[in-house]
Amino acid sequence: MGCTSCAVGGFASSGKVAGCASGGCSSGGCNKMNSFDWLSDMDIPQQMRFNIVEVRFKGGRKEYFRNINHLDLYTGDMVVCEMTNGHHIGSVSLQGDLVRLQMKRKQVPVNDDIKNIFRKASQKDLEKHTQSLARDLPAMYRTREIVRELKLNMKMSDVEFQSDNTKATFFYSSEERVDFRELIKVLANEFRVRVEMRQISLRQEAGRLGGIGSCGRELCCSTWINDFKNISTSAARYQNLSLNPSKLSGQCGRLKCCLNYELETYVDALKDIPKVESTLKTQKGEASLQKTDIFRKIMWFGFSQEANWYPVAIPDVIKIMEMNKKGIVPESLEVLEPPVPVKKGEKRTENLNADLVGLDKKYNQDQKKKKKKKRNPDRQKAAAAAKEKKSAE
Image 1 (tube, rainbow, N blue to C red):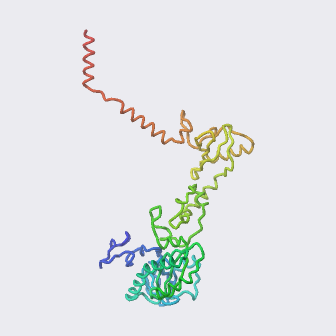
Image 2 (cartoon, helix red, strand yellow):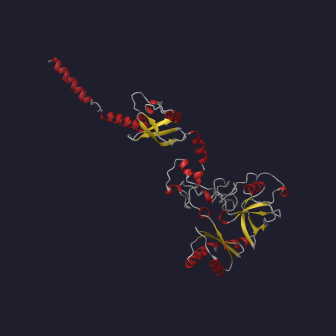
Image 3 (spheres, rainbow, N blue to C red):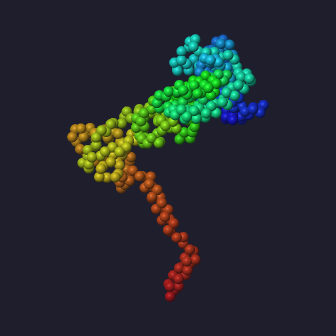
């Protein structure tokens, strides 16, 4: 399926889809974990280009390989890459000087441990790769049955067969340490391949499986997040969010990664807001903090004997706190100028629900207009005739 940036509307002249799968998309494709190569238009000689290429495999996994043969590669090209034992096929996701910047950011050393790219994948290579992909799903179901039979406390998330069908990587998640030595023997006899067990976190598992988040968009971990940062409940407290686990947790069962997106903005805004550790003392009573509007710089206080909350601007709160420290007790919170202007004859408590008061006034006016009956012209004529007759008599 082509995207909106496909110049031909999603279909090439040959009838094939010109979207991500065929590499005909001008944006480089909409594949999972896709990186936009904004230096691709620069005409640099092949010998002067950075000879390490970023290759993406199943599940968004990315590795780096040397282009020792100086192949003319483009984003989306399928290449045969060297592995520890055998070879594997992946698609080129990034190349050129941007790869050097990515390796520097991820602290990947440029040394002899980086393996090579053999060649571009031929039709025969792609057929073998398709056959290996077809083995992944049945192998995962069979592995789950074996895990249940061995009574191991682990969850099998995904299976990835190498393109040459000589090795299989089993991805699993578990809350505790698992002794899977017996499992490896059974899997090796079952599938006749070299077995590698790789434990992943619940966030990585959600990223490999994918899904739709509560925001309606595809999961961030399955589209663009590579590094999972620590997320604590303090991020929700800074943003005045309800500490409800069902709302703060993602599909992985952990706190949502998006809690960190606006955290710095809230932390900067909280620098100007004072910490009210005790109640504000007034002659009307002691007012306790109920909530804080961080961006409007307003703090809401309430008295224990009342159900109403009173908005107080940050400078006024600081002034009352300084007065309390000196032993001065103001008359009430209403003595200070309110942050919201109050009309004459209108109580301060009405400003708390000013929008509802406006709707009530509008509704009452509409009701009065409906009650006014339209005057009937026949009745007016009859009344005028009766009045003339009475005056004639």
